[in-house]
Image 1 (cartoon, rainbow, N blue to C red):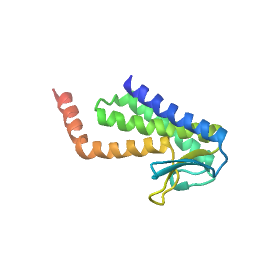
Image 2: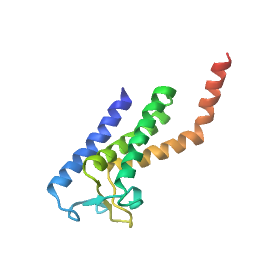
Image 3: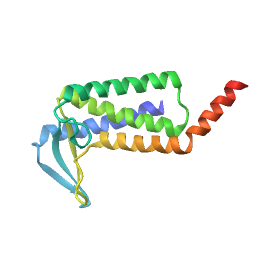
Image 4: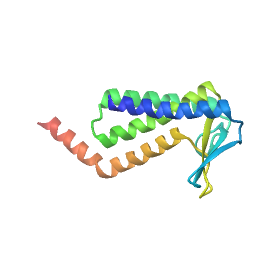
Length: 158
């Protein structure tokens, strides 16, 4: 249940900000600064991260949907229990799902967080969720995957 709440919170937060920005701003407009480190600037992204595959929205939409479906199948079949793994998978799913909503219904992803302290592509809450989830997944595989596999193998041999 916690994982559904986290998923809903990420999607709701990201889609709410995107709705506000897309309805009240013009592409390229900047709304305000946050601690002189970030600003809110509305951009349309027709690609994936760093605008790779720009203009290939159909392909990216299919990839997003297949990824989300794969996560659901994984969750049902494997029933992960490790909190770090569950958090990682949840964060990646929520971000991918929210960006998929944009790709399917808008034809582009709304990006709005621009860094001012470093030259970096504009991104959104969904992108943050995917990145945090991927980082947590790497940490899980480095520090806990072997323990979980050993515990699973020991329980099967008993």
